[in-house]
Image 1 (tube, rainbow, N blue to C red):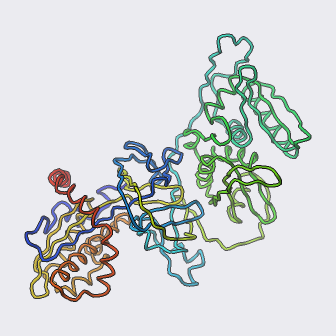
Image 2 (tube, rainbow, N blue to C red; image 1 turned 90 degrees about the vertical axis):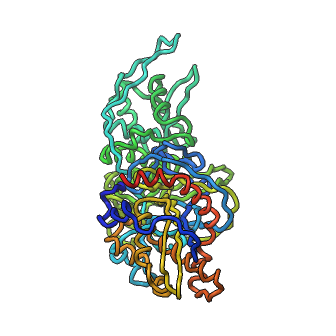
Image 3 (cartoon, one colour; image 1 turned 120 degrees about the vertical axis):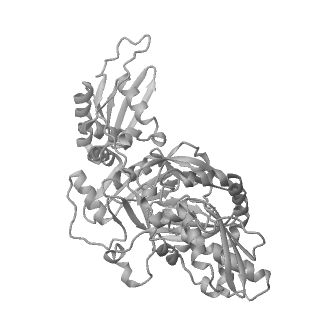
Length: 546
């Protein structure tokens, strides 16, 4: 879903366009400074145009996958120094390193036996949670890619080299049909290119037990290119190799997918095909490097290409199949060196779905408890571990247009970095005046304005009992992606009260002190963002008035 003014209630828009108590206050008794400058470590990888790119390399105008399943433009990038606690959070798709305040799209579950069952988990609605609020067993949401553009055919470069008099031409246009996509899957799994001047060919290597796949490659090559592929059995390696000797086929596959197992990837137009077409690409891939255990049932796929592993994950999700991805370190087994690889694993339920796609029979009688589920919009996968680490170095964030969110290989993240300053005047333990300055979105300004209305005139103890739920309810509701703004408003109030009590050497309640300790780590950065607010105040206000 894309964020727009139409998603807000009339009351939210009223408080945004005509905010109450906005502005700086002279000689305040207490000031609350809060902000959620949320960031990731430099090597965390972001979904950019069907492949993953380290966040430190993402640039303005790049398009990244958002929580709505579409690719949205990066409006700005941020980089800052950070020294402090970092959270390491892992699910079945991968691991992320981020600051504790960063928000993750998730479902927070009560920790009772009742919620071990899937039928009870799915009743909860997702929201945006600070990473530090989440625990092992809570459920993270990962978007199903929705962008689809069917490509009917592609053109082939039939330009001959200067002294090439022998190469047989193939059709100048290739239809993107079931056979061609299956052949592409075979190449991505088992294909090799020789591009020497004296020896240009594409080869496909299978085991001797996979004769039917080799014959399939030969038949497809004949049907599509009009070429008779050659088959060779290598007994000592227990292998069967199919050779396609044609310079134009070599050029086609090299341009589409790259050369060398670790460098291969699926082109953008294939990642955007309809799920119905993409299943034939998956069939070829699985026939090449995949397996299905029909008895358990279990299934898996192995590749040394990180790009291919992540792209297969996306393809499977579009088929309503939820994989797990594991990294296997480089190792030596029986004297043979095995490179670092990525293993895609499917459990019972997902193997059954894959079996339908591959048209194979598996044991349907074995049941297992599912901890994950999938719908048209998201895969819902549990957090399997959370740990803390100390970090000192640069961290990064993105500002994404429209959705205000982006995804890594494993989580959907909010990118909001709103800043609020709240000023209070206190007389006889009562907040007699309150003002705010906010550098942020519609919801940030509206919640800031609303909390000043709810607090003004109340005694401190009563004001501190106002919750994020009270703020949201008073505004007639907020979109789930914006509920964090109500937390920020409540935090700003507690900080203003803390500041007032501390300055006047009055007792500070334990809960208020603990809340202050959680918030204060962001104070230095908030000060910097407040300078931005002052510099851009007039410009932002004019935009907000439109």
